[in-house]
Length: 104
Length: 434
Image (cartoon, rainbow over all chains, first blue to last red; front, side):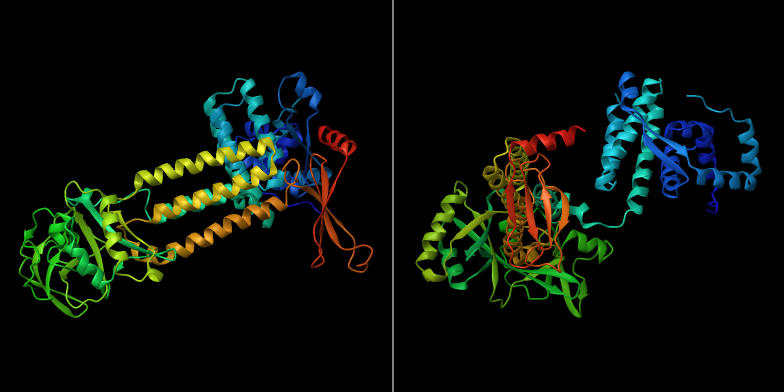
């Protein structure tokens, strides 16, 4: 599967998810983009098959007394596209090398 | 708990999200906002983030091809009736009534003759002659005409006296005036004559005809959107406004007029006469709107009690009430759309009543007759190649497991409701909880 050409914004969102920022609001914090940009981009990336979404386990959420959250993870196709995007956007590549991997 | 204002924003935005995805979409936003709030995010941050939901929702909507199912909800009768009522009320500006600045407004009445459900306001000349003889009234007549784009009124000499017009500039119309003598409105003076201070005595042209200005009315005067008024001459079809003598009630005057009319008009063409106040029925409209909204609440309560007959009956009643309220709201004596409304009102009313009944019954057919929930889970069954044993159809299930509705695609094949026993309900309950 050929890598999907991504805009800078989409690439930075994909990078955030690839780095381990799995929730919409975490991606917002990491990229500094507003929710009105991040969420439609997440939907678009998911529709293109670059990321996949899943609901958090109910038990975990119940233990923390909160509703379960939807999290996103990068797919193999997403990895390819991210790699292509990083080579296309040198600044983003430099950022990715400095970005700490988010631990859960 | 997500702050109320954020929840409201999400709910509003969710209206744009396609129905099947709406629940999960809202859950995702609530979960994120809730998590952030627990993490100590400020209200400002939460509010700013919530506004992004509108963009998210509109993107989702733009990605979903139009599906007729999504407009089912607005077509449900409560929404339909209320939206229709509001739109038409606003259209006729019934919610923002014009209260004409006539000195005798409280005693002025308009003549309405009813016949076979329609209202006719033009008065039969012999009836007018006899009406003038009754002691309780002072009658004036008028006729609205159009000269190209200009609307004007032909009025009898006592027209302004009956309405009670404040001191004009110049003079009002007199019986001896020729048909080209005009009294202009303040607005016409401002717009067409550019507020000319020496306008009185001058002439102006309207669609090729010349009129001489005798006087100018005050800024508060307005009547049926007329720009000027000329003496009434040679008109066969007249409209009447009556000024009741002090102390005479509208009901008593109406009874007196009806008594006189019955002796003159053949019974077959007599449907009664009402004298309507020139004051806009704003209070009446508000009451009916409030009543309609209260009935909507009752209809929803009936839904909870799950009584099918009462429910359907109440829905029809609510719809008809809303339409009637709307009909009353549009019955305004003075207004820009008066002529159009008097023409359309009767048929619009009948049409909307029929639409109400149609939508209620249509909606009812897609509900479970036991719990009144909308039937779901459509399953296509059968095939066109096996019409005898296996007819092509769609089967809908009650979400609570009360039964299934078989809707055949073959013409003249009636729908068939099959009720399930208790064991099915347990199965459906398990499916729901899982």
